[in-house]
Every structure is written in structure tokens, then in C-alpha cells.
Length: 565
Image 1 (cartoon, rainbow, N blue to C red):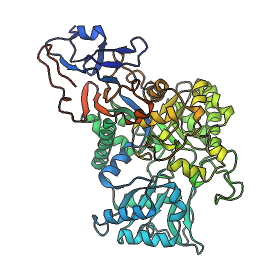
Image 2 (cartoon, one colour):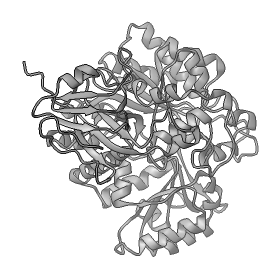
Image 3 (cartoon, one colour):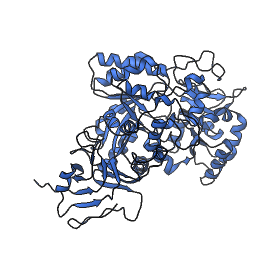
Image 4 (cartoon, rainbow, N blue to C red):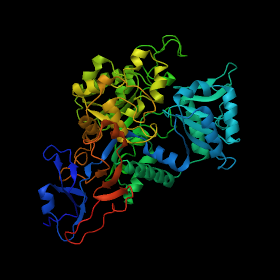
């Protein structure tokens, strides 16, 4: 058997995250997989081996993102207005006016984001009039930073048939002024009618969706991400991923979460309608192995389900605790029914009451003998102390997205609706790890501005905003160590997604997915961690991203000739 490697990396600092050989200086790749590490790797070099001299550069496994919406992010980058949620209303409207001027008279203005803290300011007919003027009569729909709520102009409301007498849909609200006129602010399911109207009047083809998915993956590569879980997948996305993989263009490991319910995106079909097509969309790199259940909403809108009430002066009804999107019995039917077919579940929970409902339900599933399905509590910012040990006991993964809870626009918005003592107790990561739980890292991009895992790692280690724009430290006792934080975005996420047999570490036989970084995270000051850049990203032994330095391009070597990267 030919033992010659296709590719050999030498003279590097290579953290494999594999317990047997955690740090080596060389790594060999053959047929897209890790062939050998250390001295065995160098012994595998032959006349046709491509050899890269790393020149002391730091290399590690590709980063993993257990929670994102990559196609939505690709659509925003290719087809939509894409603004940061820190903009003021005036600045946002200026951007809307500039963008609208590039569109045809009947084209929709689509995009976002507006910050949750602007909700009260947007909720008036006077602001709606300013929105109408900025869009120049075109229909418009803009998402907030959570992507749960919408701001729609008068033309968009009209096309969707939303008027003074339109009833609030189940699971949502059409915000109105004192006279009953819609202000354009649509909470949760309140925006579905407009999303469906947009999809009907300005549909995206499968080719457009595949292009958007590919664009999202290209951006992920630039941040060193080689595997991820799309957290709310439509049948159209499943088919687009299958199309990409069949054509050899899917350069990432993708796990999809088929939407069981939806009161945000207007997705169709849902639940069993998607599951019925699950296996036909499966491919080498695409695994449709999860369902996605939205069990509650988001705290700033009062739609997250809590055990104790929101602030009495936050504009909600007296003793308002929010609520779940379905009763516990319905959740149990979903989890039991899918567990019997080996399907796992990612469940959106932002309040402690919804977290507890999931843990109670998973306990029943485990007691029924279903030990194989994987369960993720997505976000889970708020967890009652007595529920923390149950994550490990029930093998439930805490799917966390640091960009949504370290000091920033979302945490500031949450602080306006919850008592200070509760609002400051978000994401008990140290306690979860100490209890033996698995924490997996997600970005929730494009809810977060970028899928930069190093900003998330910085937030996990410091509990501070990596940009420095928002001061303060959030619950510093819950900080975790740098090695733990890196595992959150590598080995832990691989286990959570059911991909630990192929990715997460650079062990022989696993996919040769690795990244070359601008700095060794263990040799720089903590404040510099958030500024680490990806110089190169390799997937299955093939370079898929290069930051562009003149000496960073790998070319076939002549014999043992080397090049520097």
C-alpha cells in the first residue's frame, strides 16, 4: 500500500486537540484525511508530496459553529441591506434611503438590522411615516438584531393585507397606536404574513439559495470555520446543500436542523413535511439529523418564558412571565416521535421556564430508553441553579452564542425588561462545565454581526465585549479558561453535532480540516485574543481560504523542496 502523503506541513506549532499527540510540529495529509502526525508524518513524504514550511506558524483544527443561519447571512450579503444593529434610528433611515435609491420602484427593501433597544422608538405612526419616506414608496421589511421581530413600512403592510382590523396571529403581535393603526412593528409571528407575501412576490430560486449558502460558507471560511450546524433549516435549504455537495462545491461539514415549528420566517413546509424529504437531501457533507423547535421568543419582546415575572414597568401585562409556543405534552410528542427515528433536536429557549420544560421532557425521553438522540438547548441564557446539573445528567448540550450575551445591544435591551439581579446572571458557563455539562459554541450569525469565534472565545474567557464599545464585565465568576473555550468551538461542537468521528481534532483518519492563524492564542495577551485572524483555511486537505499574503499560496513541491506560508 502506498504510504506517501499528498501534503506535508512542517516546522509548525500544531495543536491537534487529540489526547495522544496534543502538540506536534508536522502533519501529513492523504486523500483529504489526516494521515500521520509528528515524525510519522515526515516519514510519509515522497517525490510527489506537496510540502509547506509553516515557519513556526500556529495551526489547529478548523473551528466549528454549532448554531448559525449561514444561508440567511449569505442572502444578506448578496441581496439585502446589511446594517449593524448599533445604528441610531436617524442613521438607519439614512442607510435605508441610500439603499432604496438603487432599487426599482416595486422592489422590496429587505434586510436589517435594527437594535432591540429601538423598539419603542419605532413603534409610532410618526416613525412609520419617516420609514415610508426613506423607502420612496417601495415595500420594505427590516429584521431586528434577534431576527425575531420585523419593522415593515406602509406599502409592505398593505401588500400583506395588514390593516386596522387584522387580528394578531397566534404567537405574535401587530403593534398599534391608540387609534388601532398598525405602526409597522411586528412581534414574532406578527411578521409571518409579510414574510410570506415577500416570498410570493419576490421569490428566490433554488440556484439563488445555493448561491447564498455558498456565499455564507465562503465567509465562514474566512473566519476559519470548516463545520457548522444551520439552526433553522427549510426544505429549500436542504435541497440547496444537496445540490452544492453533488456538484463538489460544499466545502464544509453541515448539519441541518429541520424546522418543526416557525413563527418567524414563514417557512413551508414544516415538521413532518420536511422530515419526509430528509434522506433524499443527505450527502457526504450534509447531514439533516436534527429538528428545530422554537419553544419561546426573546426577552426584549416579552416572549421568552420565565419562571418569575418581567419588570412590572416594562410595558407588559401585570405579572407577565411570557410563555412557551407549545404545551409540554406537544413537546413530548415531538421529542418522542423523532427519537424513535433517531432524529435529534435543537430547541430554542431564552427563558429559564422553557429550559426547565426541555429538561423535564428529555428526562422522559431518556427514561423511555432513547439514549442516542442529541439534544441542544439553544441560547439558554437563563438557567435556574437547580437545573444546571441536569444538563450533564441528561446529556443535553448547552448551545451558547457569546455575542448575544456579553455586554452589547442585546444585553442592554434585556436589562430594561428584567430586574437587574436576574438580567446580570446570564450564561452560567463555569457552573455548567463544573457540573460536567457539554458547552458548544455558536455564533447565531447573522443575529450576531459576524461568526468570529475568537470574539466569542474572548467573551467566554473575560465576560467582556471584545470590541470595547460596551463597558463592564458580565457575571465574571462564570468565566472559563482559554483551553476550555477553544474546546467549546472544536471538540465539544463536534460531539454536539454527532461529527466527532470525522472532525474536531487532527487525529489520523479524520478530515484534514485545519487553519493557520496569525498568532498562537497561548502566547499573546488576553486582550489580543479577539484580534486573531485566520491566514488560511483548509478543508479535507484543500485550501479554501487564503488571506492573501504573497507567500501564502501552496503549490506542488519538487521532491523535498519547501515553501513558507
